[in-house]
Amino acid sequence: MANLKPVPMAREFDLAHDSLRDLNFFLHKKAVDAGVAQIHVRNPDGAHSIAVGLDARLDVQIHGHVGYYAAGMNKHASVTVHGNAGPGAAENMMSGRVHVKGFASTAAGASAHGGLLIIDGDASLRCGISLKGADIVVGGSVGSFSAFMAQAGRIVICGDAEDALGDSLYEAVIYVRGRVRSLGADARFEPMSDTDCAAVKSLLAQSGRSFEPAEFKRVASAKSLYHWHADADQEY
Amino acid sequence: MCGIVGLLIKNPALRHQLGELLVPMLVGMTERGPDSAGLAVYTAAVSDRHHKLSLYSGENAVDWPELLGRIAAQFAHAHEIETHGNHAVLTSAADPDELVRWLALNASAVAVLSVGRSIDLYKDVGAPAEIAERYGFKSLHGSHLVGHTRMATESAVTPAHAHPFTAGRDFCLVHNGSLSNPHLVRKKLEPLGIEFETDNDTEAACRFFEWRLREGDDLRTAVQRGFGELDGFFTFLMGTDRELLLVRDAFACKPAVVAETDDYVAIASEFRSLAHLPKISRAALFEPKPEEIYSWRI
Image 1 (cartoon, rainbow over the protein chains, first blue to last red):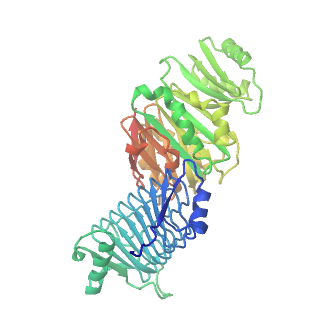
Image 2: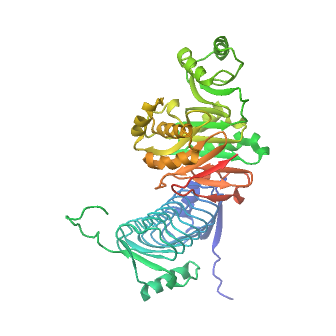
Image 3: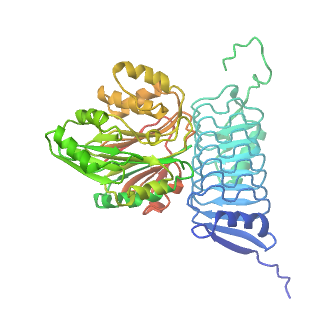
């Protein structure tokens, strides 16, 4: 007899009837023990904090639009939003994958340490602000002040960027395919190396995109703000 | 934090449902603004010879028929009053400025919330659901509306500090955010004879825009000028008898989302206030961009 593997079970929550607290409690404390690997969430209707703080290899499929902080602090899990996300999607993610199929509001991926955030549509202002190591792929364009003070990680922007891209960047690197309205203080364009092209190719492949890496420009820190200059006029 | 909602009905057949569609929108913004709420509703205009005044008496018991009698004795014009507890809409052929002045002197318990031909205004302290119930928002009809739920940060929680703010005729404004130079704006406007009713930052913006409208700007031009005059954080939603206008400051810290269908345009701080609207799954949804002016006309 063939060695049959147990089929992972799926579970559905309908937020029109089930409480958000019950959903998040199940995801945190019960799903793994119950052998449930895939969770569908119906009628999210813009609720805040859906699937925050996950810490297991779960596959969460959210069918609709979500509010603030969706999949924030995610660790290990894969969360897909079949809709738009409110402010702070995947903020402080540690690992795993968050995929927003629509657009994302402000501060998507803020302070994320690890994992991959994919936004198929546009991301609003401050995408990847204070990024600490995660990767972000934006299929559309990003708003102003994106990657502000980003410390580590990579942001691939397939569309355009608004004002002050990469202001006060540390070691994070931005790859942008379209027009950049303006760079922020201390951010500069740099040539694409083979390593950069390989990184862009890999991130695009992981997000299901097939642009040529050579179409992207690299934006990184000029590092002129790394040290305090007492004589500088302080006009950054 | 505050919540903003707006709704403009494009399909006239739905105008009788305006209030019904509104109530879940307003209640959906309770967490953003639990301390007060308000609403401006634009109805079919009264005749050219008339104006409507929304009146509010707060905790003061006002004998509305008695007040109407005194008004009739003073002004030889036709007057009608529709009352709802401590709220009344007075329709009159008298000069509205004279009426407002007379009310201030002779009916000090009554506050004038709005003046115009189309606007009815309600605002009060309390949870949005209670206020919606108190004033029967569900049964309101009209073409468009501007609503607000308030979490006070800059000034006191009183009905007068609740939004919408009004100035002039048929103009109102609601605000999510905080202005950092309202006193400078006020200092500029007061010497022009513009009077303020509160110390609220939003009132400064409202009176600034209305002043520009009286000076001949259209609303779009007035708002464009406002970018140079008003400093701070804002998502503003404004109403006139003909249009709704939405604008966010350059940093866009205060959220907004718009849903548009063939039947309506709906605006809210968050999608959760739009989720119940008819055919929302087929609506065009977008977030207004910073310093871009969006307007819709009836």
